[in-house]
Length: 292
Image (tube, rainbow, N blue to C red):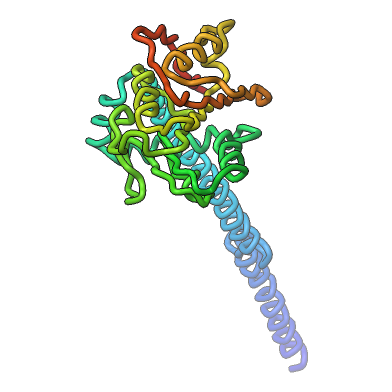
């Protein structure tokens, strides 16, 4: 009886063994696909997400930054181009044409002055500041006419009574008109200022208007871009320019040529001024900016 039991036991053990042998392949067959089916190590998914998120964000930020920078450059270029167009318009048309042009679209004048301020920011010294300091060193009771006042810097920085005059203005203190025909009374001001504002093709008529409104012994102060008065580079002869104004009834008191960007003239109206019948006005070179 024992042998059969032993045999049976043996068979059982073999079956168990066989079962184990059969299960092993089964187990191995279950484990074999595990590497392919099993998810990547825990660190792998976050790494992918970090790369995805990090790369996405990193790429997006420069893109936004680059886009913003590109848009800024495009706006600056468009603004600069618009300014050059308006600047050329002012230099190559009459005062009345310029007045009508900006009257039809006053916003263009803001565009022009934005570009003008940008250009002037590169100058080491502002001529308007020199004129302001000159006024402060003289009589505060003088009445001043600021022809082509821009943002009315003179009126804002001196104690004098100032008539600020320009083509267009949203400031009620500024007189908008053609500078050849102002509403000022004859012989009503002590100082007439032209700070980089002799721009029209009929600029002599602006000076004739200044002569009309100036009192005898009144001052005519002119700041002009140096290149416009450089005969070696196509500009007018500054001596001929001064001579023409003298023939209008003024005397040249002084000329300041220290600044490399502009020249300042200080004229004074003669007490008994006699205007020459024919004045040979030199043509002033337009001050045009090159495209960049």
